[in-house]
Amino acid sequence: MPRGHVLVLDDERAILTTLQKALSLEGYTVDVAGGVGVAEEKLAKRSYDIALFDVSLPDGDGVELLQRIRVAGSELPVVMMSGHATVDAAVRATRLGAIDFLEKPLSTDRLLLVLENTLRLVRAEAEAKALRTQTGQVGELIGESRAMLDLRQQIARAAKATATVFVTGERGTGKELVARAIHGASKRARGPLEKMNCAAVPSELIESEMFGHEAGAFTGATKQRRGKFERASGGTLFLDEVGDMPLAMQAKLLRVLQEREIERVGGHETIKVDVRVVAATNRDIEAACREGQFRPDLYDRLNVLPLSLPPLRARREDVPLLARHFLALATQANDRPGMAFTDGGMSMLVAYSFPGNVRELRNIIERLVILTPDETIDEGDVKVCLGGQQAAMKGGLFRPGVPFRVLAEEAERAILEEALGHHGGQMAATARGLGLERSHLYKKFKALGLRGDKGEAEDE
View 1 (cartoon, rainbow, N blue to C red):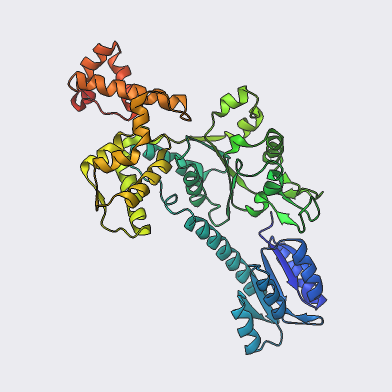
View 2 (view 1 turned 120 degrees about the vertical axis):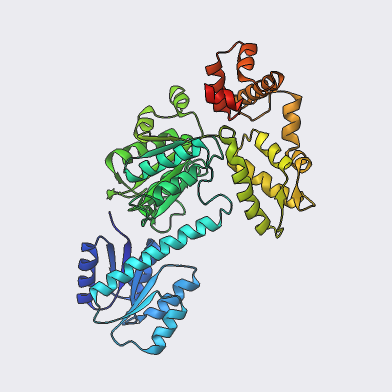
């Protein structure tokens, strides 16, 4: 699998041949151009990871070409080369954003080091940019509950393997964080991490987005474009909301996972891919398979290493940690330092069911920071912020748009909490009153993140 796509611009045929052979042996895909005009044609037709430009050429100047592509908005990393380097040329190239300026005769070792460091820097900057656009959504998987400790162990084991990982969980549980954690702890951590939301890409464009396209493949395809699989070369591809992928595309994804090769839209070249796939969904995929909405063979191919993320209501002891983390982010972003929760305010957050999970908690915290007039966030502030959700829960069990399993768990929680209070916190008496085996009641409490009589639990 190519380490990167390189364009070499030089008017000396011997240098083009030497560089093409040397870089190809190191795993790069190399295009060559003997003049500025040819280079501009190639740049217009396809994308490159990095370019090497000679300064002096028969039909132009490499530095001027660099200036033109910068004016056009291209951020292509460019390394300049020259056998007659001048300080003025080097300064001009550097001001235009050239990565380095190499003197001829070129040192192959130096050149390879520059290419490797440049690609690593570009990928790191791309990931950092992605992280900056997701303030509050990224970082460590926060929590000290048993569910989170188990999840971290599963992530560590999955990171050491090479198999496809299938992450399931309700919306807002942190599936992308898990994908980032797996990639970061794997041997592919130095490679790119590409993300694709299968539900957000129009069905007519999803194949091009995933596999890329050739120039002229369809209306608007003016130049060659590499897809997610090619851009994830040597790294990880995170397919989010894979359960919403169209059936026709599912068949093509299955073939790629089986054969480890792709073809760009409108192309005939078979390209080998070296990519680890982490897929995620909040859908019940087994039900989707039964209903004919998802291919069972693709599910089998994806579900090699399954990871199930717990909902926030199943790890309520983590709510204070998450709330304080999001509070720190929100107070900084909204210039409201010194804000804090009262015990009552925090208790009300812990008691809430969070159908939107961690994402909903983050949004609620930001809302509280913006709307709370004082520096302390108390029970009344939280109650006002939750507003409609709390009113809906009091007005009836059904709430439009909330899955049945969430409604059922909330009803069970309310019944068990009231029954436990009625019986003075005694689990044995509560079990008898409800006609349940005490062991079954303990399991229910644990699954719902509730706490019963501590002394009795230890005796059990």
